[in-house]
Length: 197
Ligand code: URA
Image (cartoon, rainbow, N blue to C red; front, side):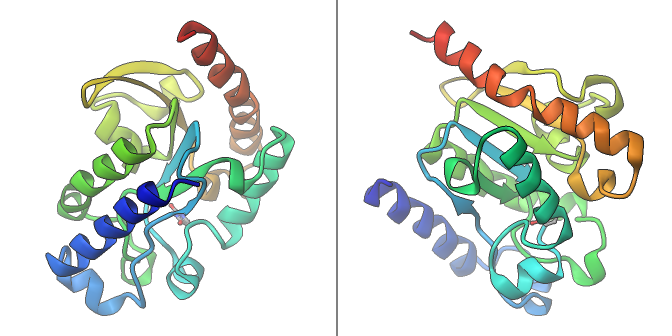
């Protein structure tokens, strides 16, 4: 893990606090939940916002949806330390309500900075809240599991939209669809690596 990347990510967290981003959420949340995992990862997962467990522990995806995410990572021969996991909104919305458009917009520039530091090969959006920022106007039901190369920063990045593990957790057919899509991720990363040699 690169110390300077870690320092730059810590600086983003400090900026969010110093600029008092989403003060109403900051007041009701326990803490900022920035991200977890390998800051040199090829794959970054982006969820919606922290829930109760994440708010308490200060880490993304540590509740029921996180357990399912860990199981899918294991099925794809990966662990959390191979990837980086974050959310578009970094404070827990009260009562786990959906993040508001203005909350997502306020956090978006900080998510972009995180991604510019980590420079993943693939960004996996979990659910529509993070997908809509990278692939505006697209419908998750139509494009889930399909990698899309988009302009990003000074170059391009591949976005792979997946259903949100919390939505799929208790829905048999969605659950299998998510698992099937998830198992395609290592192959997508390999293809990108081959293409960039
Ligand atoms: N759901 C999310 O979108 N993010 C988390 O961190 C946990 C649950």
